[in-house]
Image 1 (cartoon, rainbow, N blue to C red):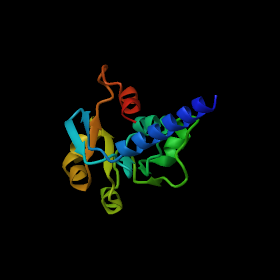
Image 2 (image 1 turned 90 degrees about the vertical axis):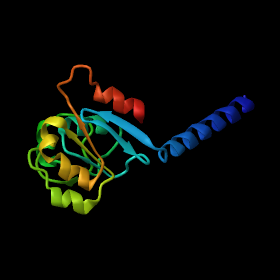
Image 3 (image 1 turned 135 degrees about the vertical axis):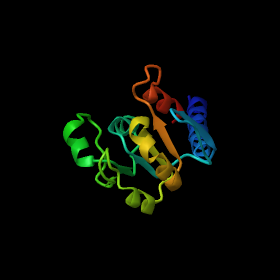
Length: 148
């Protein structure tokens, strides 16, 4: 029994070390506008679409900044809500680009239909991924879960 416990503790330690190592590895995210490469996992994430905020929260990832938090909390009925530390960066239709730039995020997540008009500005601020929620084969929740 003691050997089993030691083996269990060692496996748990290795899994934790592997997860920590993975956060510093380069990753490529495929999205509606192509691919975005990151040198390491993003820690400071801006989410400019409620659906993706909901997905991240369901996966246990708190975004640092979100669009329109007040209305998100009013209209999106989920168990997990953004923490009180999450900062609002404007509306879904008009995110505050100056504020987002000042915050220096590692990654920006937005839908392609909202992001195309401000794509160049967003990409000057931080790597930007744009997903198309209307694409039937685009299961962004499963994809995000697999990459965590």
